[in-house]
Amino acid sequence: MIMRKFTSYILWEVGKLFIVALTAFTSLIMLTGVVQQLVTERLSPLAILSLIPFILPISMQYALPATLLFAVCSVYGRIAADNEVLAIKAAGVPPMRIMTPTLIVGFLFSPLAVWTMDLAVSWGRPGMQRVVMHHIEEVAYHTLRSTGSYSSDNGFSIYVEAVEDHQLINPEITIQGGSDGPKTISAKSGELHFIPEKETLRISMVDAILNIGTSTEGRFPKFEREIPLDQAARRGRAHGRPAEIALRQIEEETIKQRELLRRNEELLGARTLIGLSVGRYDWLESPQMHEATGQLHMGHERLAKLHTEPWRRWASGFSCFCFVWLGVPLAIWCRTADYWSSFGVAFLPLLLIYYPLFALGLEQAKDGGWPPYSVWLGNLAILAVGAWFMRKVHYN
Image (cartoon, rainbow, N blue to C red; front, side, top):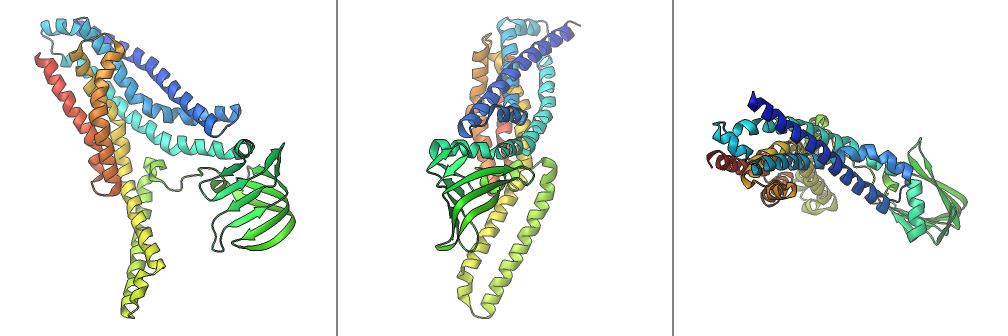
């Protein structure tokens, strides 16, 4: 009966501190994300408010393991400093009895952390990009007023002499891509308009000159062009990146990628066979063959990342349990009532062991050199260190 009350007391204290710390840490990370958007994109307050629901799961995926570690280190460090653990051991109760309920809580939190991470990468980040793209007109005008230029990662750029109200003075717009070379449009004045129903950025220009490649195609008293948001936005949407695919969709994407690789390998093999059969060895070194080989290499890289991604998310999610497994006995062993001291001592092995091994396993698995489950190296190392500290707490 006494142990049941003591266990309930520990869980209550851990729960209170966890909720407070999670609220504080999540708010801090969200504030950092909001400030970053304000600095980089200069969005309006209304746009920032619409970003908050998408930033929340992104913030929580980082805050959950850290706040759980902070809560258990603080509570167990305090009860150890007050000699409550020694009193329990003197009464013949093994320390594992008071650690087990918290370990169970850490284990149950791990699938929640996996779900939060999946929500963050498949809904949160694309949602943030969508909000920024839907305010592209506002972002572009602000950037043009302050720097005189605006460019995206997809070959779209604007240069202006000045911006007066909503008018672009002497704009020059470059659109990369296309077999005929980049398109350059220069004009006396112009305007930008976001078309939400089409998700495009409309460019309206007066006295425009259109150049394709190095030749002039024509002069137009009025010229309009609609640019897809994916091309006009600074970062655009991620097209099929494994890190931004929901877990339930990864298997389907893996099947598609295998089929694409099979077709590319057959095509490359056919080209090679034809070149050898007709004696055209120069075909083997043609730009088309180099391009096909490069696409095949990129396909294998993407397939390795697709294989690794589910393992990465589950390993990251179950870091909650691993952190608790390490933090509880380490806090008891340190016997300090200071919150930050116990947390700092527990975080040191994570900094020196967990994160380097996790990063190493992830990098090697994504490159295809190691199997996908290599991302669990950091978790296994922390479990081993935590088991060693548990043994010290039990026998000392």
